[in-house]
Image 1 (spheres, rainbow, N blue to C red):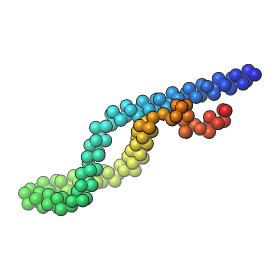
Image 2 (cartoon, rainbow, N blue to C red):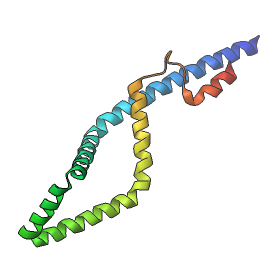
Image 3 (cartoon, one colour):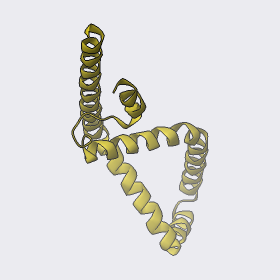
Image 4 (cartoon, rainbow, N blue to C red):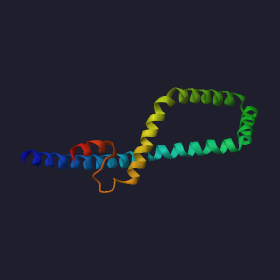
Length: 132
C-alpha cells in the first residue's frame, strides 16, 4: 500500500500545481492587459479609422487633393511615410500576427476565469487521466 499512498500524494501535488499554474496564467493575463491596454486602445482606434475610411473613401481622396494643392511637398512626405509604414507592416506581420493571436487567446482565457472546479487544465487532461 505504500505505492498507493505515494501515487495519491503525487496526484494531489499535480492537481495543486495545475491549479497554481492556472492562477499564475490568469494573473499574467491581467497584468498584460493592464500594460497593453493603452496600446490595444490605440490599435482599436486605428482599425476603426481604417474601417471608416473604407466606408468613406471620398474623404481620403479630398484630403489628399487638399494636401496636394496646399502643400505639394507635404504630400510627398506623407506618401513616403505611408509607403514606409506599409513596408514595415508587411515585414513584421508574420512575427506580430501569431503573437497577437496568442495574446488574444490568453485574454479570453483570463476573462473566462479558471475551469469549473479550478483543478482541470485542458492542456494536461491526458496526464490527469493517466494518474487516476
